[in-house]
Amino acid sequence: FFNSLFPNYLCIWKMVKQIIDKKARPSTLKADSDKEFILFHGYTGSPTDFNNLPELLHKKFNATVKIIRLKGHGEKLESLYNLKYKDFIKQAEQVLKKELKKGKKIIIGGFCFGGNLALYLASKFPVHGVFSVSSPYKLKFPFNILELRFLELFVDSLDKMIPKQEREMRTTSFFYDRMPSYGLRLMHISIKDLEKLLENLKVPILLIYSKNENVSHYKGVNEIFKKIKSKKKKALIFEKEKLYLDHNLFFTPVKDEMFDEIINFIKKNKLFDKKHEE
Image 1 (cartoon, helix red, strand yellow):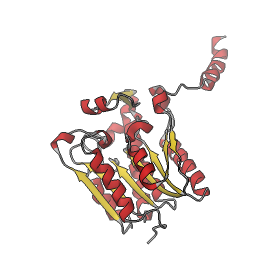
Image 2 (cartoon, rainbow, N blue to C red):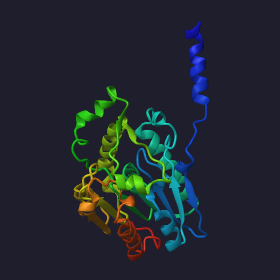
Image 3 (cartoon, rainbow, N blue to C red):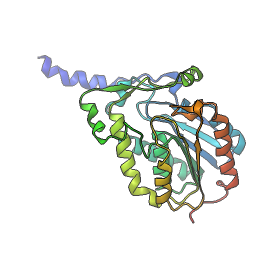
Image 4 (cartoon, helix red, strand yellow):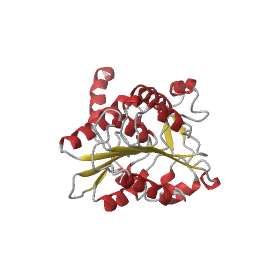
């Protein structure tokens, strides 16, 4: 009798709306112009990953800034367990296509896994530029060990290494203390996907890394630059003792310098003036 009812219970459970933390909600800073930024946060992060960069971009360029909440994020960690790479790709493409149909001039930005999503979109769609912070195109040890992709068969999630400084600066932000083990497979899948697409990337690109962080390897810049056809490209690599293990540069002492570099790159190359398809 119980077994016959179980499928119904399962359906009801799936229909229950997941509660989204108020701190993790997506946001849009609207502007009366055709200029727009679309930002994608990191895996197990939230739209708050970017600190006050969205407000700066909105003000400096009179541009609309959309900070996307990736599927499942802001809910219980278990909400991420069944979400695969294709789910995030589908969401990202839907968001961008909708804005492109409005005739918007769009610059894509992303942090960590969101940085990989940004590079993916820039290689497939007519955007005006892309910037990526700590994009895990090349992973550091031990995350680069392929066998770790199968860790999900043994444990559901892993503790994240979040510096004390970042925690102190993110008291009003949402992020998880743990990462689903599938996240490791997710990163490797996204890297393989990008390897096939980067040769199509022609728009101006800015890559930002910390040399001392513990997840993304800054040498990924060289591999990306070898593949892309962009004539306007720049790499910014921070190397300071204070940044040891700081994966999220948006909550470090160099954040203001990084924000200035992003803004200056956009201004210098006049990214909103025309499409860059050299």
